[in-house]
Every structure is written in C-alpha cells, then in structure tokens.
Image (cartoon, rainbow, N blue to C red):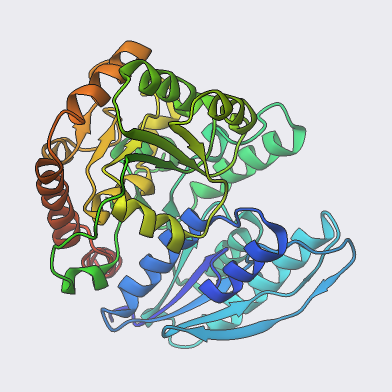
Length: 396
C-alpha cells in the first residue's frame, strides 16, 4: 500500500505566526529553516499526499508559562502546535511524552498508508515520535539538514550542547530511511546503510509559472549577503576583499545577525559603500535580492561542516534570477558549476579578483547568466518535483 498520510515533525509554523514572533522579539525565528520545511511540506501536498505538520515552533515566553495546544491552517498546510510548560527540562519531557502518545495512537489504525518524517534537529518531539513508530511499526524517515555536532553557530564547549549532540547522533541512526542534503552526510548519520536519497535543497514551484523577467536593478549596483553574520562564514574576508576590489558605484550589503555584526558596523562607518541592514523577513530579503546585481556566499570550504551541508540560501539566490558568487563547497554537485560564479581563491585578494572580474560584466550579461541559473533550479529543483522524489523514495 502506498503512503497517503504523513506526519511532519519539526519547528515549522505558519508564516503569520513566524512574522508575529519576529515582530515581538526583533530576532530571527529561523526564517531559512522555516522556509525549507514549508516548501518541503507544500511539495508533498502538491503530489496529493496528506500532510499534518506537528510542531514545536519558535516561541519566546516567560518561565513557567503554559504554551497552549493550537491548530492552524494556512495556504492548505495544516498545523498542530504541541503544548508544553516553559520550564527547562520539564518542557522537553512534556514534548517527548505528547508526541510519543500522539504518534502511537495515530499509527495504530491503517498503519500501512502512514509515515512520519522528522527534522532531526527538533530533538524532543522527534525522539518521542521515533519511539512510538517502533511500537506501532509505521515507517520513520529522517530529514537531515545539519549535523548538530558540526553546526558552526552552537557553543561546542557547552555541556548541554555536547549532550544534545550525542543524543542527536544516537537517535538519528535509528530511522528507516534518510533524506539528506549531501552524499557525504550518509557515512555519518546512516551507519546501518539504510535507504537514503540526496535532495540538496529546494525552491518554490509556484515561481515556475512566472516568466523569466527581472525587476529594475538597484543603483548603485548592490552585492547582497543574507544569513548568519559570522567571521567563520568568510564575511570579514568578503568585506575586506570588496574594499580591495574598489569597484565604483557598487555597495556591499549584509542582512542577518551574528558575532561579526559589531565589527562590520564599525567598518560601515568608515566606508559608505558598506551597509548593514539587520534582521529582515524573508519576503523583504527576497525582494531586495531581485534588485541586486550579485548575491554572494563566501563560506570557507576548509571548514569540516561544509561537506555536510547544502546552503538553502544558494538555492534561494539562484531562484531569484540574480547571479550567485560562491565558494566551491564540497557538498555542491558539479552540475551547479555551470550556473554559478566561483571564487578561485579563498583569500582577500582572491575575493577581490572575483568581485572585480564579475562586476566588469555589463548588467545585461549578469542578468542573462542569473536567468539561466533560475531556469535550472526552478525546472529541476522545485519543491513539487522534490516532493515527488520523496514520495517515490518512501514508497519503494
């Protein structure tokens, strides 16, 4: 029997709820993670399979607050938000028990047409769901977007982080099937060599219906980076390389937050062609990406974690129709090389040379190159097509 009902366990929430959380806190509630999960769920729904998002969404509340059970429907996605009491440790016990019993009873009837898909970084709810799936014998599928122990934005010296990393590694190896972003992930998370597929990333299938025209480009020409503002992502070197390139009528803009922000702000005061725009909603960032001349991801390839990730921002950048300049990340298949510009050297001089060479091209030349990349990802990596691949993979 083919799978017709899927529980998707993660931190996914409606766009309305996420934007509300952002306005309330001023912080990034995980826009990139949210977009990835939302597109994945939409892609499965568009292939006529029922999906329910059972979620523990981002929420900043007072200690001891009771977070209520809620239901929501937005753009045909059905959400159920898991209740808990906001007290350290007790919260995770509550989340574990709730999902354990929910999945246990959900899977007792007609189990052959059901499966759970877990974003393994949502540890508490996914462990509960996984244990229940072993009892009621429904298929369990892991989505691995990052390896917890290698994520660059966590404090690896923290006792809690080390424990969470070990817990994540232990339970991640117990799923029936795996959806991975890179082939290199498989050797780490799938020691029992169970079935796996490599998805890389995905973009919005609704963009396919639009013609490949561009909006009016910004003047002066703009280079944009959006994401974690961290020196280990190459952002200090990028800023220095951009200044060294000394391209007239061009500015470099950063969106996001991270440990390099304060240093970059000081640099912005000294150089009018550098600009920091803080944290913005995905809608705002995407709109600005359309008007930019170049989008950039300078992440160093020497960092171990780059083998185990395919940055979702690269897919978003390519889908915008604005050219992407990136490093030759180990997790990026060579088929992408025809559609992106690559840094030849990961040095200040190398970054400067690449920026200077690319921006010596005319705007029509850059637009033409960007539209080829857009066509490639929208036709081959859109979430409806990826959703079909996932369903076919689950049903094998």
